Amino acid sequence: MKILHISDTHLGYAAYRKSTEDGINQRETDVYKSFEEFINYSLKNKPDLIIHAGDLFDSVRPNNRAITFTIKQLLKLSKNNIPIVIISGNHEQPKLKETGHIFSVFDHIENVYPIYLEKYEKISFNIDGKKIIIHAIPQTNSKKDFEKELRRLQPDKKGDINIFTAHGSVTGVKNFSMNEFNELIIPTSILSRKFDYIALGHFHSYTKLEKNVFYCGSIESLTFAEANENKGFIELNISNNKIEKKFIKLKSRPMIDTKPIKCSKLKIEQIMKKIKEEAKKIKPEQKTIRITLDEIDPNIYRNLDFNEIRKEFKNAIHYEIKTNFKKEDGKNYKSASSKIDALVNEYNKFLNSQELEDKKTLMEMGIAYIEKVQAKNEGK
Figure 1 (cartoon, helix red, strand yellow):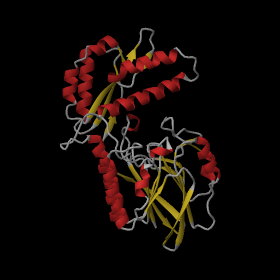
Figure 2 (spheres, helix red, strand yellow; figure 1 turned 180 degrees about the vertical axis):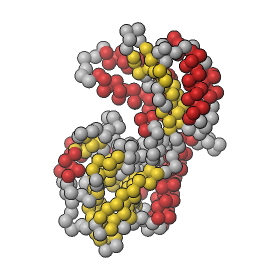
Figure 3 (cartoon, one colour; figure 1 turned 120 degrees about the horizontal axis):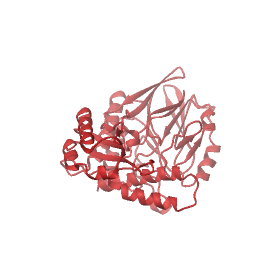
């Protein structure tokens, strides 16, 4: 028996200015290609079941291109009798019920099982003489409601194999979080409820939490926090109630976050030379790249030859310069990127004027959101 676990496909995602010859955002196209590669793998290898653990789409209202593409790909699975269970994630969950859920378009597609009604659901499959029960809790708009549904969660003794799937942040010894305000928390106590496998979504890095608990990660690197990672999905092979897991890598676009260049004792010419050396080493063509300048004097930074830097990275899908300015008091301040320093500085001033706890965490979360909005704006 073969089951595939995929998540965080974020279909419809777009970022940066680069477009294809057809005028479609390049990163949007990259995500489609990765998902289609997964579908083709499924058609070739004929899994008995696919579990999608949330964030199929990148937004509550994906564009028509994303919807059309997705339906075409799911119909391929449907026509080949490959069932897929898809739970809603925080990205596609509407805040208002009157908005309607995009997953309703899948309700009448054979072999497609969308789970989006904010409640715990169980779906049974008879595969190779075994009863497989999928326990699914989709995104809810209330953390209280999510906790309520979690309390109902238990393996079914009538099932030969019990699999639980959810979309959220597991907190415990380590925090597997995306720092998103609407993310749900999955307590570590859930991991000990004796499910044969727990298929999680939301955290974008492939991660093993326990021998039977995995985040499969996203299919593309969507932020520089995910740079230099392999992207793909998990293949489960079940025989004699024993589960073997294998990570299947997809051909996602390379995203590179370089090792910081220490600039505190360097002159402009030396910094420019190091940037060029970095460009030569990483070979920018068709890649997404971030260069970090650490401990750089603001005056030196302003006098860098940005036209020359642009030439070095002209064949990249996207590049940006992240700065860590050296302050007069010897302290450094990290900004999200050179393009949004002003916003970050304003946000920093605002936080410092408030009586708040844990300003460091709020600062990090704020920078992440500013960077994400900037990326989406560049994609327009």
